[in-house]
Image (cartoon, rainbow, N blue to C red):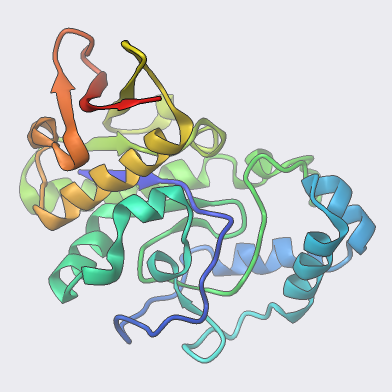
Length: 265
């Protein structure tokens, strides 16, 4: 079983490292190809391409210019320690021990516009390149075309390795956003895909509230890692911060988790 999540725009390259253990991204050479195209962009072009302010565009221009493929702990750090968005607030890696990090390395994958598919301990350098950006590269007009089926193929290899180790069927827990999951070709994925959904009680009505739903994706990832879950049915016990599995709303592949105890105003 593998869990799939998205990256974050907020990055942390300052905090002390939890571990020195690290690996290199599987698609590092492909990332270097994309960076080559990104380095040609002007600040104005980056601002328009990413729909960001000139100040942020200048920051990312500098990131592109300083990026190089010789990764070590002096110029890069592990992806799971870098990303600090809403999902990662729920994941909360600060108290992860070595066993937690190793389990995550084997059972968690992070989609990335630049790096393709990351293991948690893969080193990354600062970047911003969302999967949905229409970056022209070679004959490709966007990143979905650039990555094509390769991310799906890599997931299949990881899934087959995990299922062989635990002697269970291939299952992917999709906790990634729609923007990033579009980089995967479900029909080519040799696995059952479970799509957890998170609903909060807002004025008596259960609905998806973006911030809470994003954090819940991280909370579920944390629950899986901390409890070393390898059988997908066991995630129905997920109960962090008041969420509970709702069998009435759930279908075979879309599982709903609702939160009653905290009414959102």
